[in-house]
Image 1 (cartoon, rainbow, N blue to C red):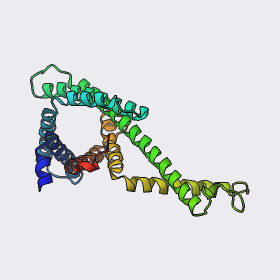
Image 2: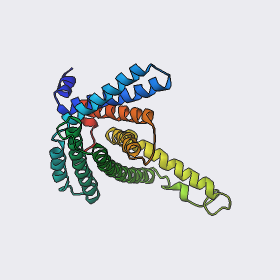
Image 3: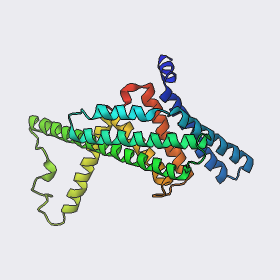
Image 4: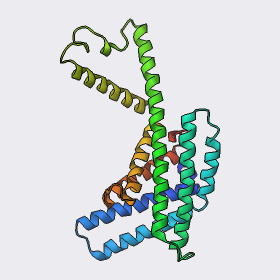
Length: 258
């Protein structure tokens, strides 16, 4: 209960709840349309989705300043790759929120002459760049952890008298035997997949971040017309990523740091 009280007190938490409700409406609207629901009900769901979207934009006013502050902090990271990925991601998020604020002004009637389509496309481009940087950062962290895990396994094998990297040794079934190259490649690939699964299982914050960013990626890809997924896929991916974001707010230890 205490965790829920702390969660509800955060403005970011309210925005995440609105986001989850918005994409749930998108998914529900797609399901209603597919099953031939009444046009009036579909219209009400679309209107609710639009109101939730506008409410989220209101809750995000000022987020550009927060993103810029996060970028300033990321500049001081010692790791060059992390510094680049996180800083560029936050800068793109700041631009995305700035475009989102302009869109809010247009949709709320404060700036009726705003070209909403143009600013929406701009905001989704910055959102896409931010997600690409986030996924690049995730891939880099996964690579580092896989190298550490592989080194630890090699040390354990040496300590127990085993042969590290035994898959690459010669002998019967070695890479020098004709016709055995493909099974060796398949075995190495399987070992890499198992190592990846072990790393992600041992680092839940990284796993959640990968899944969340991968789900979010479908949204700008669809909105920009780069890969048409349809409202059903967009709604499902948005709902999943929103639930994971809410989970990281309720359980801060699940948030990927730095």
